[in-house]
Length: 124
Image (cartoon, rainbow, N blue to C red):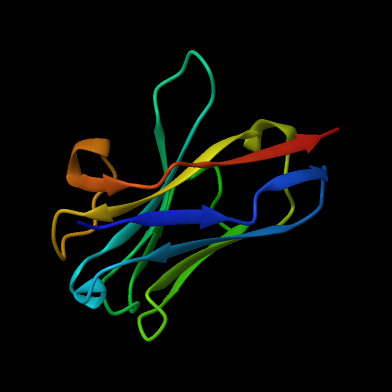
């Protein structure tokens, strides 16, 4: 059983920064791509960023490109999301997720394990 636990959420003013962390259980962490998604009430969960299994490739939604950085540390079974220049529209619950394999996807259906989520609130 794989468990993903996010941390680092909170409240910040527009223009500020937060760094989310996701700790994963299991011995095969480095064989899976990892992703970050976010969701606001009444809307579908949306892709934010993803990183390949060894960390060499990263992918971003257009809305966060240039402001967010995704990374991972396979020795620590962890994935991170550094969020800079935050905007009120970044307010959401953020989830980390494990891909079904090495393929880095942007769709919810391409991820099989999810964390419980962490709230990020950006005030103007």
